[in-house]
Amino acid sequence: MKAAPTLPTAFLHATGQSLPAPLLALRQEAGTALVDMPLPTRKTENWKYSSRHLSLTDGMALSLPAEGKTGTSLAVPGYKVAFLNGVMLPEASDYPDLKGIHITSFDDLSEDEARRLAGQLDSTLDASAVQMSRLNTARFEDGLLIRLAPDAVLDQPLFIVHEVSADASGSAFPRIFVDAGRNSRITLVEEYISQGDAPVMVNTVTEFLLADGAQVTSVRLNMEGEAVQHIGATGVRQQRSSRFESHCVGFGGHLRRHDLRVRLEGEGAECSLNGVVVTQGKQHYDNHTNIEHVAPHCTSDETYRNIAADKSHAVFNGRIHIHQDAQKSSADMSNKNLLLSTGAEIDTKPELEIYADDVKCAHGATIGQLDKTSLFYLVSRGIGRREANVLLTMAFINELVDRIPVGSVRDTTQARLNQFFDQTFEEA
Image 1 (cartoon, helix red, strand yellow):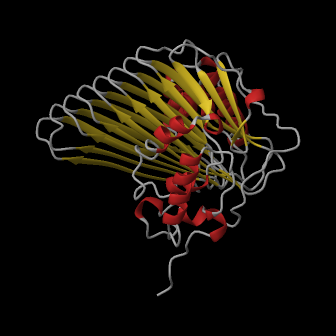
Image 2 (cartoon, rainbow, N blue to C red; image 1 turned 135 degrees about the vertical axis):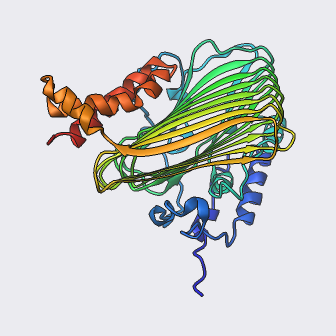
């Protein structure tokens, strides 16, 4: 029997020697654990659709160009932290120095701060389920730590712009860790873009710890070039009466994947997960979500929409796990999918695993095409066929786009959707 491919040796050699010693030690430990790690294949259940797109041929870390400048497609109305090729650029960043709010790069952490962080990293993600997250731990060159003291409130959104330079080749491993103290509040926007269309791999990990009563809004916008492989993971742990709200918007590429895992560990915790994915050409996008109801009286609400055109492929796998002691849980999951061509493919797999008997849970998934009756109705009243297609398609996802709480992200999403409509319905 042919052995499964393993992680190339080049991916186990990291640089970033300016990191504090505790983080270097953590990275070395993770790298040692990855020796001979088998790569996901079609036989790996949660990678069976994405594995054929994965290509790890160059483990070299991306270097900064001579002029380390970064841009953004967003009209940033809040604070900003800039990353270029996985490394933070302080000179291109503008964030507050406020009482109770600590924002700093991993490179600038003191020995004690780094030791505390090293003990917290990877605490939100199950490495056996989110296989590629440990690769980030073994290879991150830099990262961003955000700590909010009890009752601290960041008054504007914090935009974190991750950019890949036009001449890049190799891989980037950006890392974010957010520790939200009791009753604190923050809105975090992650934007992933690239200057060109270099065939690089971006492997990201973002982790959130929410103490009692903390409120975190996370917005994730993925708009990198076609050839960029993006493998991202987000882990969340919530304590009593905390609230986590997620808005993920993704546009397809050669390989796009995002794993989102939430653990409701404190009584009365709530989470709301919203996602929009659009693919065209031969693009691929794979979303995996997992919500663990560990404590009683917790609530989760999840709504994802996929649109696939041409010969593209979109995947949604959502799982809700109600633990035995999580009585009085309320969980709802909805995944609706729209095929715009006969050559496109969408796979959906909603899962409920319930071990408590006093719960309220529901899940559902649909896959369909534009309604011909509705299309005929619009055309018969003088609306052009292309405009009718756009109206019906936008109506399918408009509810989720409107929910995005940051206006600049809504505007950017709408502009990118207009490009998608122009390309998909140009001959309609």
